[in-house]
Image (tube, rainbow, N blue to C red; front, side):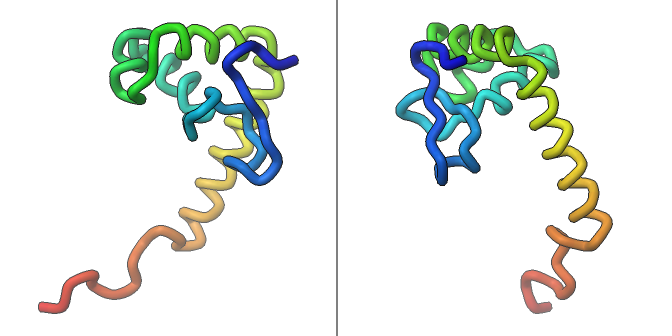
Length: 96
């Protein structure tokens, strides 16, 4: 179920729901809220209005099972890739 101000397009941010007109995913807002950032802090950090943050949180309330599953998949992928060495340079970035 979509909420006004929230869009989801195939090929944009992996088809994940985002705040309309931005690249900010609902999962980004939810993660910040779970880390106990206030709505005001989230709005400032992501350059959003409070209305946009509230729209994201309302969308999450209506779709929490799907968003929580997506967050879990993201965490599992990060752990898997991290253990495989992705994201870590094999050689120094700058020569000595």
